[in-house]
Length: 175
Image 1 (spheres, rainbow, N blue to C red):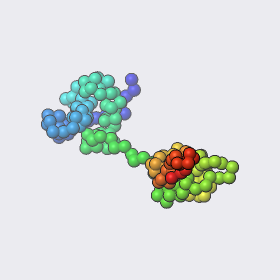
Image 2: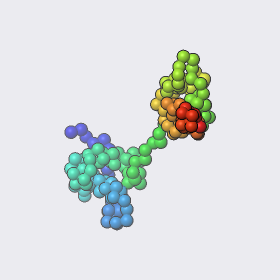
Image 3: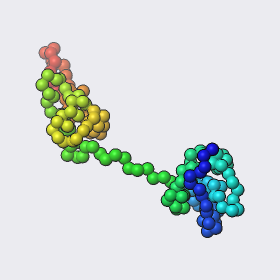
Image 4: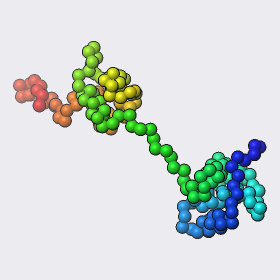
């Protein structure tokens, strides 16, 4: 088994704080779990020596969780180790409001010559060829059009749908 890279060594003040946190019923369960992990992985002179697997079994979590909490304590401090890991915000949006408006205008407009309708790939290629975006995938186009409830398969993108009604003379008329 390789040696631990992140070794937890708590001082008396930190131990007291963690014990108080565990005994107080007013904190989140994950914070109590992290506090127990830190107390059990403490390699101070009065602490029992336990492996990460034994700590995980005792606390009721995975071994990787124990490793991550130890790492966060050593690299970022006690306060951060007790908190949940904050996920990084997702990737920046590829299409801003202006580009979305251009995409919708393209989709509602006439398709290219030789085509009956716009496809997602054609719209993505057109957005790039117009220098509205650097790159664009068909999935980005689909998500944007889905968000606006625009259907490329519909025969009419207008607000009113024409209905066929029976004419008294036996024919059909549109209304």
